[in-house]
Length: 465
Image (cartoon, rainbow, N blue to C red):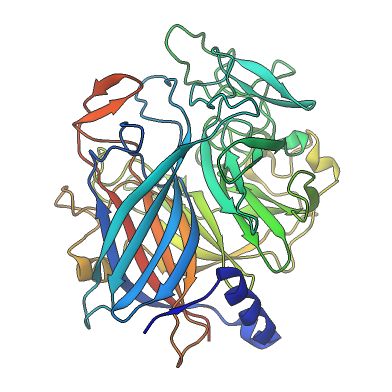
């Protein structure tokens, strides 16, 4: 016997039964229940190396006789790049997943399958490219990042599927919010307020300082205001009950302390009315205090956020992590990988204020006294070795394929279908493997990275009772 439900209907049903006190209760982490892998050298439908999860949107979910099964979209970013970017055609992958109910003390093995791949294109059908932008491309009066090839440059990081099947995708270069058809053709684009836009010498300049072959480096290398290089709209989520689309900048703007790794913790979230996805209306803007931690030398570092997801009761989950630790990179032990509850209650709405211009809301990382930031509360510690051991995984030495990889950047929330706990959910978290494989092929050429980093999906269970 199987049970299936639309995810939007599930959300609506839960929202109808949420009380003020229940909504205030913290989700309880019931642990890791399943783990799935796809091999690092997997090729997609276009014969190029598959590049896992910068963003996720669940399409379908059901309870089966054995456990669970479903399908989801997984969004790779701009392609394999070590020094500079390439003319990688940006795309979306569709995957299926199935796993049985786990045994006590163990995580089930999830079966993952790549079903198909489709490209993201402009309105004329020309594929968008991962090349670092060197120009401005116009779309209905909106300034978009433009590549040397004439294509629109896109570094996609988050994806939401709307009820009509069309897609909202956010990126790092703009940072921009794009609306695509279900088949991946551009419909419209939305830019954020001026405070978010990368400016160099008084002009809009979308480069992330990762030029393609024979392309010039930007001058200066870093924007003077706006988003930092490679720190755009990393997280995005839609509340289907309210049609609120929330995006979060990966870390602070340059003017808000984003010019230093130790002071970039006051990032910003934008909340749009997405009733008309081609005419997004800004409803609210909040300062989000990213987590900080100490490294081995006692230096204060910031865990930049990597993804946003909405719970069925409308609350938000924010995934933040450190860098340069995990399988495939130099360090073996991550110091911070965590999913937090993001709460805007009591936070100051700065939308439409002078902070949307070039006045910093947190100069040198110090929040303006007139502004109250949102709050974060821990929900899932992904570095918990007791939980990881349920699937034969670990954080830290030995530095091998069982050590979690560096980047975890996508989340999806689905119902657990438990009659005794009808509000329980499963949280799917996928890594971004950066296309790392020793047997790679992309943009007409083979490549060899230093390690084979599999695509992985971790599944946790949360209780919202």
